[in-house]
Length: 373
Ligand SMILES: Nc1ncnc2c1ncn2[C@@H]1O[C@H](COP(=O)(O)OP(=O)(O)OP(=O)(O)O)[C@@H](O)[C@H]1O
Ligand SMILES: [Mg+2]
Image (cartoon, rainbow, N blue to C red; front, side, top):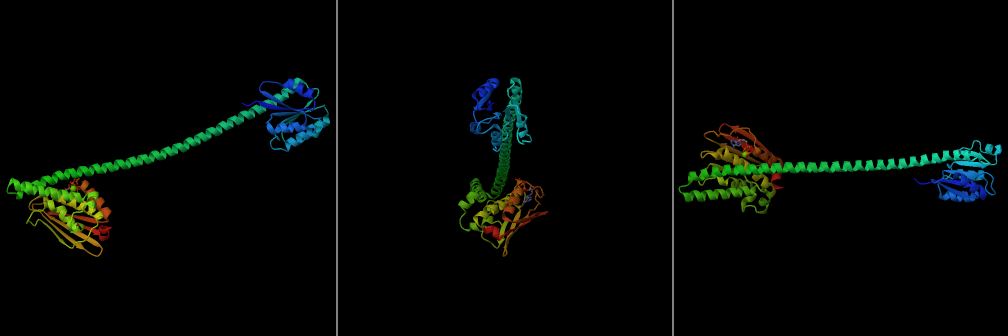
């Protein structure tokens, strides 16, 4: 803590020296002024805990000095002890004096009285200093707490953000894994169906092999249409930009030369490469299910598709006929159903399924705007 300063004001050097001798201690700095002006000068540069002022001085007397001190913000609260020659008048002149502590001590000065009076102000000042230090410490702690609170909020915000991202990433990964799993599982199911289909028509191993290769190539083409980047980079040639063409590519692996189990008819419409991926995905799901459970899973099954285009809508009616009835008719929803729903949302399209005893009927309606945007 900074040392306490007292100001001693007396025009007589010997009085200053005797005051100094009486008050000297290690934690106290005694500033000596030989006039009121000198005192004011010192007060400009030092905070003092007490001013001991001789009342009778040439020039500015003690009271005038006190008036000036009270008139200045910096010094108005400095406690003052006047050193008087003992006249009661002097004390009366200061009765009712408003601001700050004022006391009197009479000459000849009694050392014990002086020391005990001075001690009160010394202690008061020390306490004020301690309070100021504590106040500064509390303010610093409050600021540090505020800062910590702010950093905690920022941290929580970031953490929350990260967790959300992480959650989103996890959810995306989850969907991706499920989709990969779904595609691989279906690929095995489709391949096994295609082997059966090829085997049914093949007269020799060579025929079986070349028919199967062609179907697998067609399957790869159909699959390619469902991959966004590949679909937009390398659209299949010719009529790839119409719905009918997409249907043909998707169903090609399941078609048989000269057999009419798959028929596609009606009016056609153009489709943009962006919508192509979504539509191909939807048709791929329907074709895969037909090959796993429906009309394309048995040699005698029939699939009839009718397209109709009105001013604003493309409608696709999809009818499967299975004889004997297909084994898979049900409302169970697998990942394929979820994928279908997502695609329909993306295309603003609707799909209605009707489970007949002899096969699935469904109709899809897509706004033409969704197909060309
Ligand atoms: N064309 C269809 N003919 C008969 N049943 C079908 C047909 N399409 C779907 N189903 C029935 O609807 C159910 C749900 O189909 P969905 O595509 O959601 O699942 P999944 O194909 O069985 O499995 P996943 O799609 O997860 O690979 C199928 O399990 C099947 O029972
Ligand atoms: Mg499915």
